Structures are given as structure tokens and as C-alpha cells.
Amino acid sequence: METKYLFVTGGVVSSLGKGIISSSLACLLKARGYRVTIQKFDPYINIDPGTLNPYEHGECYVTVDGHEADLDLGHYERFTNIRTTRANNVTTGRIYQSVIDKERRGDYLGKTVQIIPHITDEIKRNVMALGKTGQYDFVITEIGGVVGDIESLPFLEAVRQLRWELENDCLCIHLTYVPYIAAAKELKTKPTQHSVKELQHLGIQPDVLVLRTEHEVPASVRRKIAQFCNVSPDAVVESRDASSIYKVPMLMHSQHLDEIVLRKVGINPVGEPDLGPWKEFLSRMDSATEKVTIGLVGKYVELQDAYKSINEALFQAATYMGHKLDLRYIHSEKVNPANVDSQLSGLDGVIIAPGFGQRGIEGKFTALEWCRTHDIPTFGICLGMQCMVIEFARNVLGLREANSTEMDHATPDNVIDLMEEQKSIHNMGGTMRLGAYRCDLRQGSRAAAAYGATSVEERHRHRFEFNNDYRARFEAAGMQCVGQNPDTHLVEVVEIPALRWFIGTQYHPEYSSTVLSPSPLFMDFVKNAINYKQEKEQNN
Ligand code: GLN
Image 1 (tube, rainbow, N blue to C red):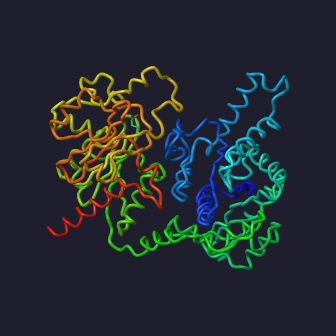
Image 2: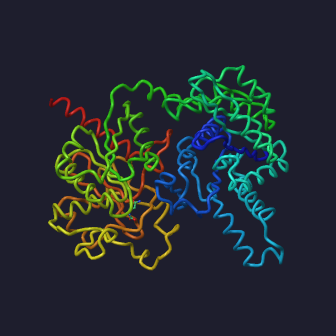
Image 3: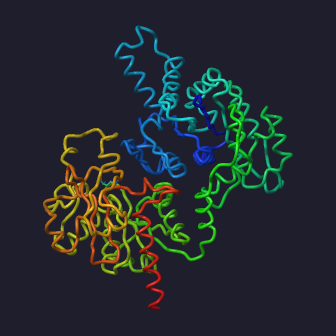
């Protein structure tokens, strides 16, 4: 079949969950046996979100091929099990960079280079790139931002042109907001009408409307919206707040979103999507009563999107282990030796978060010393793993000034140091050690047991590494370097086998954890946190 292109735009306000709607639709189409991919076009000028502070856009996600990407790509992977790449996330910056490179090469043969047609053509080329590989039946393209933003205009013009060129192989889903005015006890449709008018003004008639709302939108209101917006009444779907994002595919399916989309691109929907394993996950989620309490020690805890993939990986693992996740955020800047006991006691497991720079680092060391000496299941991820190494060097090896050269250039014991290949790099963007690398795990290690494998591939995003000059001293004192890259011998995993569960990974296992295939390491961590909790209960 010809590849079908589905565009998802947003209106009224941002943060309506276009990523979740796109992911849910992809999940349903995949469950119907179609080959699906999702891509996101972000209207900002940054080449990628890798240089953005997490306070700006939340977590920076990393694809297997080493692209620093918008966190929505994490949702795409978690909902569909597909692997995204650099081609799945394009920004205005990337589009302009590519057009300007072509201009410098002389590719435009002396023409004046303009937004229309050159920028829009470049956008169209990128929209079609994954489809042209022949690997997909559906390419879902989410356009970031809100209709009406100046910066999204070239993207919407590209969508308009593609709709005209692709005719029935293409459609537009517009996500809007229907607010409820409590004083008037009324749902208001005007913002939706305005937003659709704005889209029509740009030459795009949406085919499907998804109404984000906190209250039920009655059929009469949906009919009114359909009539005012020129959309068929059955193609106005509500997306009410759900208790979990993972219920949204079911909510969309119950209103036939998958069938509506298929029919509109000329496919007769036969049968039902195979959602067995997904429903199984939801039923575990709904039937869980016991909770497991995990503390996440990090410096961006005011902003939960900063640790999106970790939250989701923990949630998936807890659900599979039949437990509710009680996740407590602990601000690393606020942990000190005087309060660490009250901040951490009662937790069943602790995660020491990834991060960059000095701020909050001493709190991580304090938390780690407490976790290590109280033998509580502890998981250090990236900077968290590096902190495990530094804390161990200071308090067990007696190297009191041990540090990472990221925090202290002049440390006498640089147990964490800049990677050799990083020393000549000065640009910030896209220059870390990024993407999936192989890691060999020592036979008999806890990490190997968790994976049930002695060779794994996980994704990375860092510049600093464990300093192998110290390896023998760590191992002799009880911290084992059980995972390493087979080519470069970089240490990827450390663990203290004498403790209940104390593992640090230089890589980010959270990026590859999905609903249907949760991370084995997160599963093992949560399992051990639950065991620890039960042990504590028995001893009480
Ligand atoms: N700042 C550390 C490094 O660059 C860790 C990075 C991270 O936690 N993602 O190596």
C-alpha cells in the first residue's frame, strides 16, 4: 500500500498532549498490524534539544543512533516499541542549516533562497523521508507548538501543500481544548472554533478533531463543533483526562479514532486491533494495591518532565511487579548530613539521577553514603553512577578529595575523568558520547543476572568516564566494574556485590524501557526494592 501521512497539529494552548495522542494512534495502528512510525517537527531554532536546559523543555531523549531528541520521542517508543532515529525529530534549526548549506554549495543555481519554496520544500522532503524508505504504511507527523504561532507557519504551509499533493493518502488531526467554566457550568467551544478557523485561514481543513477536556463533551456539543468546523460528526473525538497516559489508546479506540482514520485514508477497517498485552498491562496497573516507594535524588525535581523516561521506566517496572509506584522527588541541593536520615529513611529504593555540573552534587554524595551504609537498593544512572564511584573513592578508598574533573579540574584523584576523545572538542551541540553502544557484562554479576545476558546494548549521553587507572583499587575494596565496552574498555556498569542491590550504569537504561518491553534492569531494581520492603515489614 501507499504510505499514508497523518499530521497532528495543536490549537488553543500548548501541553494538550499531542505526543500522547500521536503515540496512542500509532499504538492502535500497530496493533492492527500496520508498520508505523512517528516523527516530531519542532519549530524552534536550536538544531536539537541537546543544548537546552531541562527547565526549558524537560528531559532530553536520546535515540539509538545518537540523536538528542525531544522527549515526545520517548512516548513514541514507549507506546509502540518502535526505535526512533535522528530522522524522527527535526527542528527549524536543522531545516535552515540544511538550506543554508545547500545555498553555500551553490545547489540553488543562483536563485534567491526564500521561505517559500525553499524552506517549505526542505520541510516537505523531511516529512516524506521516512515514508520514502518503503518501511512504513503510516507516517505520523506531529507539528510542535500551537497553530497561530509565527514560527510554525512554514511547517503548516508544508502540511497544506502535502495535503494537496497527497490527496487521500494524507489527513490532518487537530487537537484542541474545550474548557469548562465552573461558574457557568458550561463547556466552551469557542476556543476550538477559533483555532480551527486559524487553521482554515492557513488553507488546512482538519479531518479529525480531538477535544482535550476535563469533563465529558456531550454528543450535542460535539455535533455543534462538527458543524461549525466543517468536520464530519463522527470525526469529533473527546480526549478526557485519564488516570494514566497508558489508558489513552483505549479511550481513543472506544471512540473509534483508529477506524475513522483508516476510513478517511481509504482503508476499510476490518477486525479489531490486537491489544491483548496492552490490556494485560492496564489490568495489572488497575489491580495493584501495594505500593513500592522509590526516592529520586536529583536537582531538577521541581520539573517532573526532566526525568520523564526514568519515571516511566519505574512505573512500568512497578506495574509488572504488581505494585503501585510511589515516587518521591528529593532535591539534591537540600540533602545534607544533618537531614539525610529523615529525607531517605522509609524509602524502599533510591535512584541517583543523571545530570551535569556542580549544583546539588554534594547532596548526591551524602545520599549515596547513607544508601551504601544502610544497604538500601540503589540505582545510579550516568552522573548518578559517577557519584557512586566518587563517594566510594572518598569514603571507602580514603581518597578524600576524589572527584570528577567535570566538578574539580584540579582534583588529585580524578576517578571520573573526561573521555580521551572529548579532549579536543569545544562545540557543545551533539558532541557527547551519544547513542547505543555494546556493553559486556561479567558472568555471575547481578547486572548480568538482571538482563539474563552477558552482552547488552544501551544508550549513552556523557562526556566523562570511569578512570581505569583506579580500577584495581575499586575492585579490591568491593566495587566491581562488571560492565565494559568491548572495544574501548570504558566502564559502563559498577556494582557492590556485598550489598542488596547497588548498581550504577554509565548508560541510560530508561530510554529503552517500553510498556510492552520494560527495562530488565529497572525490573530487577524494583523487584529488589519490593523484597527489601517486605523484609523491613517482617522485621517490624
Ligand atoms: N555530566 C556527566 C558527563 O557528562 C554525566 C552526564 C549524564 O548524567 N547524562 O559525563
